Structure formats: C-alpha cells, structure tokens
Amino acid sequence: MFWDKKEQQVKDFMKEHLVKIKECLDLFETTIGLYLDGKEEEANVSSYNVHKKEHEADECRRKILAKLSEGAFLPFFREDYIGIVELVDKIANRAKTVTQTMVIEGPKIPQEMRDDIRALTHKAVITLEPLVKLFDTPLLDKPKSLTLIQEISTREQVADAIEFKILKKLFKEINISLAEKIIIGNLVTIIAEVADAIENVGDRIQILISKQAI
Amino acid sequence: MVLLAKLFGGLFLGWGIGANNAANMFGTAVGTNSVKYKTAVILVAVFVTVGASLEGYKLYHGYRFVGKEVTFSQAAVCTFAAAASIIFQTYLGIPTSTTQNAVGGVMGISILSVGMAGVDWMKLLVWLFCWILLPVIAGIVSYAGVKAIGYVIQRTVKNMLLLNLVYKIGLIVCGCYGAYAMGANNVVVTTGPFFQAGFFGDQTHFHAVIAATLGGVSMAVGALMYGKNVMMTVGKEITTLDPFSALIAVLSHSLVVHFFTQLHVPVSSSQAIVGAVAGVGLVRGVSTVNAKKLWAILSAWFLSPVISALLAMGIAYSIGVY
Image 1 (cartoon, rainbow over the protein chains, first blue to last red):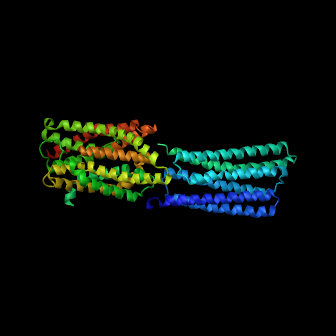
Image 2: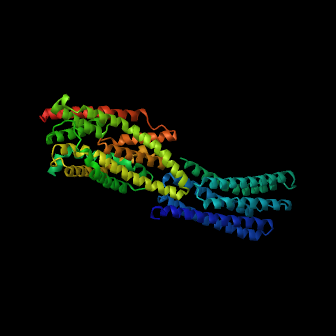
C-alpha cells in the first residue's frame, strides 16, 4: 500500500536481517563443531564465513536504519525499531567474536568437555527459533507474542544452566593449567552470551508491545 | 485592494487564527513526520476554507448583541479594536484568545451604540457559559475517546504496521477535520461584523456564505504564511504526546468545536485543545493542566473581552463612530 511502503520495506529488511543472523549462527555452530572435531584448518575457513555473514547482516542493518531515517514508522515507534535492529545485529557480532577468539587463541579443549560445549553451542543457536517465529507473528497479538518471548527466555535459561555446569566442571574436575582454564572458561562464557543476545531482543520487543497498552 | 483594506481588522483576525491554530491541528502529524510541514499548512488552508464556506454561515446571523444593525464603520472599529487588543495583550505578556477578543470588540461597540440596557446580556452570558463549558466537554469527550477508541484498537489491531498506519492516517484525517471545524466556527469573527453591517449586501444565506468564504481565505493565508513557524515552536504543546493520545485530543477538539458551531456559538480552538489534552492526560495519569495554562484560559474568558470592549469603545468614541 502507498501509505506504508517504507514500513513494509523495513519489515522485509528486518526479516532478511534475521535470515542472515540465522545463517550466521548456523555457520557459527558448524565452526565450533569443526574445531571441536580437531579440524582446525576447516574451522578457520568456516570462521571466515561467519565473519562474511556477519558483514552481510551489517549491510542489512544499515539498509533498515536508512529506511527508518527516511521516515518509516512514526518516531514514537521508530526508536523501538532502531533498538531492536541494533540488538538483533549484536547476535551476529557475538557469534563472530566467539569464532574469532577460538581460531586466534586456539585453546586445547579437553576431550571430556567437547560434547558439553557442542551442546551449549546448539542450545544457544536454537534460542533463535522462537525469535524467528516472533518476527512472523503480529506483535500486538499479545498472547502469542508473549508466549514466544517466554520461550526465548526459557531456552536462554537452559543455555545458562549448561554454561554453569561446564564452568563448574572446568574449574573443579579438569586437570589443566589455570591459564588454559581461564581461556576455555572465557570461550564458554561468550558462547552462552549468544543466547543472552537473543534474549535481549525478546526483551526489547516486549517493551515495544507494553508501550502500546492503552 | 480597497475592499481588503476596508476589511483589514477582520482579515487580520482571520490571518492570526490561521497562523496560530494550524499547530493545534497538525502539530503532532508534522512532529511525527506523518506529514510534511508544507503539506500540513496546505491541508489546513484548504480545510479551513472549506469549513468556513460550508458551515461558517451558521454563526453569521446571530453575531450581534443589539437589535439594530451596526454600521460599516462600527464593524471596522470592533474588528480593529480586537486586533489591537490582541497585539496589546501579547505585548504585555497576557495570554489571550482571538475569538474572545473579537466578541469583546462587538460587545464594546454594542454598548456604545445602544447603552448598557439595550445589549443582549443573556446572549453574552450564554456564550460565556459555553466558553467555560468548552474545555470541560473537550476533556470529557477526550477521556471517553481514549477509553472507547482504545478498546476498539486494542481488540482489532494486532499488527504494528497496521497500528502505525491507523495512527498516521488518523492524525491527518483528524487534522483536516480540526481545520474544517475551526474554519466553520471561528470564521465569524473575521467578516461577521461586516456581514451584520450589510457590507456584503442583504443578510441572506448567500451573502453569509460569501462573507464566510472570504474570512476562510484570510485564515488560510495566515496558515500558509506563518503556520509552519508556529507549528515548529508553539505546536510543542501537543507534539509531546504519543500518537494515540494526540489523535484523540485533536479528534475531541474538532468534535467539540464542531458541536458549538451547530449551537451558533464562536469558541476558542486553543481552549478546546487544552481541555482535550487534559482529558487524555487524566486517563494516562499525567497532569497536563498547570497554573500557567489555567491563567491563560481564565484571562481569555474574562480579561480579553473586557480589554477589547474598552478599546473598541475608546476608538469608536474618539473618532465619533457610535
């Protein structure tokens, strides 16, 4: 429709942005998997693909911001949309940070921790699923939207619990140097932060929904 | 040009109304980028003229406080006095209203021409009562509007894009309606006294429409010339509201001003918007009425007509027009 052409474009770009984020997270999971399998060279290449995908997501973010600055949405809503787009973009930034840290620092992950890290990575990545559904749901349909936001939060808590379990195991049970423990611990923490970043988007959307209460 | 010069006082009042009140109608729509400044002032100009032409005539026949007709000179003096009174009060920093100054000017000339006893005081009391009632009714309509329209929107609009569109279109439609209502109601203060003086010919419906259209054009010119500047400065009153509250405030203002047009009572558009904003604030738990605004309204109700009437009497007496 003529009246909401810009808004429709923003919505389309936001979906495109989220697709890039999803692809970025899939590559992120693949990269970590390769690294944990000991395929460091392939992990290196895959890490570069994460970087490229993060860059593509950045391009999408810029397109959205440009459209918003052209006057899409009333300013009252625009501020929220800018906030949401920035937070969505941070998901890819986190994923890139994890893979870069991993290939640069190259920590030796003990065998008994590999499956745990694989599980944590997977749980962090699947936190995005309800967010993708949320983007396809009419936001002001409160019961549906709030259920999906709650689902994001629940999944993030699962990732948090795994992170805690891994860190506890790392510092209490694994027999490696403290320096190695700190490096691996930092890696585990930043993997879990991917789920945190996704939860932040859900929380920001909840603010947008709450502001519409009359 | 000679015609326009003769009508100077009235057209000046129309110009002032157009310039000052455009912000009330489109302040939010412009502030929220729903419509560009240029488009907004053009819409105000168009709808104010349409409102004046289609419904302005309703107030023309009753815009007098004496039984006998006024002369052209008296009409010129009372409109000029109202204009001078506005400038004088603005200079002194006293908040004022065009409508109430204009009515004061007519009152002053009426008192001078027939004496205190011959003036229709009952009509003035009714008008004063309506002026007091106006912001109260606007507040009540606004309060009810937030509840009722809010209920409908919350239950029907589930999509952010649609909500954004509803507000965008709503702000423009309500702004146009506001300009229409203002044109229909306020135009009488511009050429009403001249119509009463027979300047446009006999007091027929046709001549009332001609007079109202000319007055409407003067308001449109005011909106086109200075509407933008006022919208950017004074329009902050309403632009700070969220889109829904602003939409309801402008709609309530327009409905109430339009309602008083049907009662043939000229009212202040600005006072209607203050009442409407207060009504919205009440629902939201935000106080929008402060001592400064209350003083602005009270002085416009009581002080403005008195100053304008005294000025009209002074000018008319000094030049022998009574």
